Image: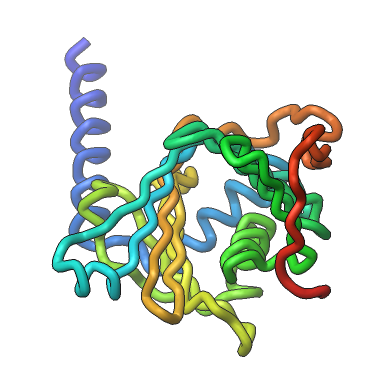
Length: 230
């Protein structure tokens, strides 16, 4: 029993030391990328509850107070580039794409926006590239360490700069825990606006209903065409 207790104590201290070491010296960006690649190499779909926080620093300076837009909902993604954002609050909304056309449904206004160009607001395309390339981030992005985020205690951050020359997103940030499980991501636009997703209850390779990424225009809804042809 003494030997058993000593072994348990040793394992506890080793785990505590490892956690402290990570807190003091976070893994290098390449190590985080390799951990994400090992975990998500076979990812074909995911589902997670999200909290999205959007901010515009330029507006903050004008009004001398931070303005934050917060929304919650559920995110669904399936390879190669299908995405559904089912927003619950502050009001129900749906944004969905089958990889070709983007639909944004606002029930409170009985409006449907149709985007022929998939890169809505300059963020949707980088998001799809990011989710579809978790197993090979170095292929599409340059990696750099990121500063700790007080809103994400104990999480590991990785800054990703898209390698495409013509882009509206300056960089993305991916967050994960010590097991490299994805906990969130964010975008920083060239103009300084930020959009951060905090994920909870992420399910890897869930069974998603057939046709859930195919949007059907509700009866009586007005459809507005947005954006240019690809």
